[in-house]
Image (cartoon, rainbow, N blue to C red; front, side, top):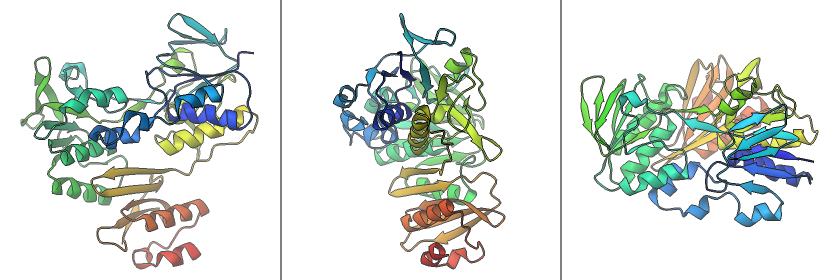
Length: 401
């Protein structure tokens, strides 16, 4: 018996093997990770770990003893290079490892700047793993000049940490506004003001033409003709699902490794979960990038590997920490046509409620946990508050509806 092999030792990979053992699977179980570190949390990388407020070992999701105690064969520095579906093996280095079932939890990889515009210069970083933070941390010193390329949540979080650390931060976003793909104008307005209040030179509708320098970056030339002198650059222009391994093996890829509702790919012996996988949802296909999805999707797939035949039905939620603001998000705002702004009970707290017609679909809550929890409960119950009365409504009456 070759057992189950899991390729990808991130949050999803660990959640899957842990759930398999918790649900009574006693067969061989191997977890392969290409990094040198055991599975770890990624959200603190751009926050406490970058600031030096969190020790490396505190990032680890489980102690090293956990894997031995649960008979999980964890192999680090093991980047899977090929899948032989006919032979039922994966190859890494000089080793071919047999599987009865293979689960791909390969996650996502950050998009990088093209080499042609200086993306290969020294001191140009993405922010995805421990090694990225280790490389940039020595440059995070007061007075250093940082350029952040990209106004999504990763870029904004990096800018917030840098500004708090005393760096001189410029953030550019090529789209007309920050958070253009993921949040309403109202939420973008809130965070634009927050960053500017904290000294960030935030420029929207501003495209990077090229980076300049010798071995390391020295300046950025912008499309509007401006030049920004920098000591380091953080690129936060999104991620893409890590699908190369699946594509080379001939599996179907459609905004991620395509699976059915249970996590199976086109090959019944190969499954996928987490950031790398897409699954059926509301007549189309959906792929989510979040810690919550990585865990819940992986745990659902683990149960299905053991015969549960339980379709994955996500109830998405996300969060972002910037300065003293905690943003909490529930639902998916795709297709919204109305946003209702509701002021919270505390000064500076506010929530933005997304509607399609009169159907409530998502909420962004800034320092407003009561609104967030109310919105999340309503979404879970399929209840839509009246958008016309929402701004002045008592939260207690909403949940009692």
